[in-house]
Image 1 (cartoon, rainbow, N blue to C red):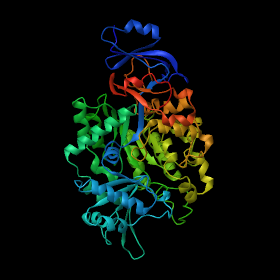
Image 2 (cartoon, one colour; image 1 turned 120 degrees about the horizontal axis):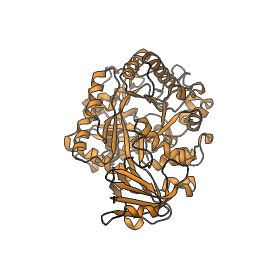
Image 3 (cartoon, rainbow, N blue to C red; image 1 turned 60 degrees about the vertical axis):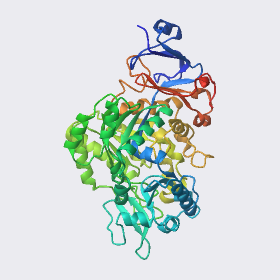
Image 4 (tube, helix red, strand yellow; image 1 turned 180 degrees about the horizontal axis):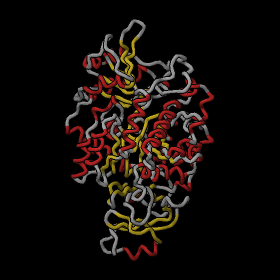
Length: 545
């Protein structure tokens, strides 16, 4: 038997041991047929075999991003104005104006990434700042966490939002002391605008998906979990687009779909039957229990320090959430909950436990997304329930930690992003980016998991929660595969598994943890095919570029 592709190197991390080893990965078709010595791999080399040698560069399983949003991410990455560098409301508005002037063809100006916590005054912006510069073009700008947005008057008028418009459930239309709409919309209130702003042509939808697949391949990502991105972004969902790409052989990243859990079990069952290929699967259901700490919409056990009358609220009534979970669990669906606040996490665990008792189910691998602020009593419950902690280490750098500690209290800080504590308590970990909330690059996530470096880049946040590099990589590869019940096919480099592989420009195990963020992907193989390769002249580089 002669192979199609052989990858050789001194540093191959299979995921089965804690250190890389010298070996060769032998690929025939879309499968790994052997992981063996370099000498033995000669037996598989024929005239038509492509042999790539990487010396001290790290070869590892393709990354599996366990939490992102495909089309929303591509929209933000490729077709919107980035506001992450703005340090004031006025600067953000000026950036938007510059973008709008250079994109006269865009009817709506979409933006992303502004963060009041990075501004001097720490206050929400106002529609008037945008109105002065763009009075006649609709503008909608999501904040860095995508849980609230900033609109100008033109956008509000298009959406028919005025001082008398009622807010939808789990939504807030901010008003000033005079009852005037300010332009800030929280949670589901954003849908009043996005259902209009996100009406894209088929051509643009295809461009969005194509750009996403290019982006993932560039970063060594071979599988993703596309999670329902909230009611505010439902207008972007088009699973038929994914299916068309799959049938045309254009998917270069495996996509695992998690549509909304809303009680409609028959629709969920129909989607599960329709999407079941090796590259496109409906893997479970996702829903929101709460919002975010900075918007005071995370569901907390204790009131917010700076808003004593509120501890947030659930996105849906607690009993309705539990009823949905019981129905979905009974039908064998994996359930994933957005739960950031400690009360939301407790509600998710309670819901899983009750469903398990009622339905006598086991092994469904439900997951809680984010797990940002947890009560210590709930840490061991992940192992007891069998729930996955699906976390995003890169969020440690998303905003100043004071945006948490100032509103929750310093006593909560040790239980923020408690990755190692959860791991030691027996929780299975799965890492992702939450793209576009954070950059998709998994190496940035690995860097934060190892260093716990905060927003400032100067000091760590909860340094005791650092984990080992091998565990972090497994959480970004095998953890995702386990979450979608595909650890027998994906997540490690083993004989018989699908050939999804990434090669980096250096050995992460041989460099300081702080340098991991500078590493680059040089080769991505998905389903046995090379879907990305940097210039071959760089293949033999021995250190991070």
